[in-house]
Length: 93
Image (cartoon, rainbow, N blue to C red; front, side, top):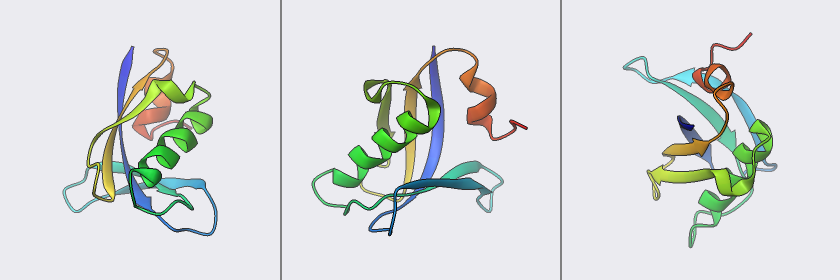
């Protein structure tokens, strides 16, 4: 099953980590992530894919940046089980 996730990326951070959920001015949820990689030649995008895959417990190949390749706000497509939907909505308790 394909899932969608919006993330806001902080490149050149001191550590790779998934932080918390936030909302933009329009009320759209996104997950804040930090990666050590620099935003050159797709390195930060690769780091985001790897970090989110590890956080979700899915293979690296299951996570792809599909929108926002050159911006901080990115849309990810994740191939995973239906149970991921609650975690990806930001409503998981």
